[in-house]
Image 1 (cartoon, one colour):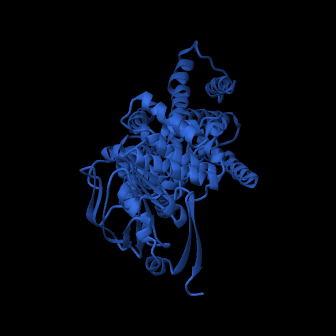
Image 2 (cartoon, chains in turn brown, blue):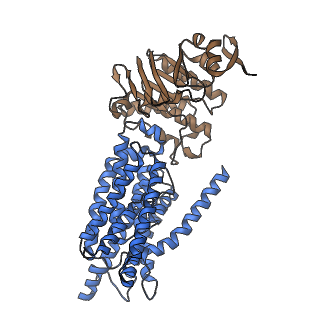
Image 3 (cartoon, chains in turn blue, cyan):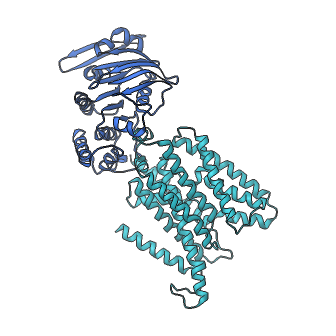
Length: 248
Length: 319
């Protein structure tokens, strides 16, 4: 269980209160500047919260030690960049530093991440020489190699081609089904509606709605937060949306 | 093969250094004068050049990794400026014997004071770019102070003496200066070993590193402390020597070393080989007054920097 209790971050996020059960994939949505990244940064301990507290499985994660937090969560920032041309294989090993896990577990997680994100051909290549989308896949694979119970991903599918967007979302869904709590900031509302168990809609640093996709993605909420109206095209295999600006 | 070539080149450079700057020499001297020259002049100079190269190479690599900036070098932190202004200022006030160890101690304190300023101005959660900006500002301030002190020099001889010292040299220093820089090297090596995992994760962006289980502020401060010790010890023992900290990590990257900790270790030895090589060159060039080491390194290092920038432009164009 992840409990966010009246958390505020300077002028960017105000008194957010949400409870998220384990095993859920939660999409954090909202327009630019709504506070999505700030919320994930506050949960990850990258940005200190100015008020409130955050508990994950009875541990106060904004007060616990950095080492303890490392065992609980993994975080993918919006812009992940690698500064030295280490190989993909070496990078996955480096991403497991400070984890409490046996060498065999680490190896299994790396092997599984390489398979899931189709990185076999990139194993020996320097990460700085990969394309933007490939680097993003490697960064997500680093998260997969950590295998933590709380996963925070800031726009994980941005920059990925359609196939890898879907495979990443499938993987996140399977992580949630295996018991992990997964929070993602996401702009693609169709993907969010299709995959997420719950959505948290933020606007101007405040919580506008929290609930199932059908509850949150109401005409009123979308008009209020995004100034758009949406026609949903629902199919058994997926969801698509037709959007138009309200001021047009 | 690259490694064999690097080791053989290093050994040749050492032999060149020991042999240059005199009419005759031998590793096994026959007369007491030759023994004295070898033990009190040639070997201390070689060791001081080695220690300075190690210090600057390691400091440069740590900074480039931690600041995620391939053009970072010890000079941009303001630490060498702090050590230099403290030393020149102490000489100006005339309170310290230029041969004694009080003066280098004052220089070290100047370097550590610069680190303190850097840390205070960089903020509670210092990001790489902020450290660079504060460092550049501090370097400018200390540079201005040095200019003022030189401007107020009591006589032309003092001015020339101080200006030459600032240009950097390892000539005629003797064993005491090696004992001065050795503890700084050892202490920094301990800090680097303690923080080896933090150095390794510097390939990731700063936000990711924040979530990887490190007390990041403390680790950054400790690594900057190691850089301050290495840089200050180098400045007080040999003056300001630029470019070694910049070039050594790139030389190691050219050898195909990519892991951050290996880059630090490799740069330590590459820095030593480079500095010993340039000092051997300085000893070999027959001029009326021996050229200052820092000047020759700048003459070689600055064009190298341009080559690196051209190469970087080429790789960007390729992308």
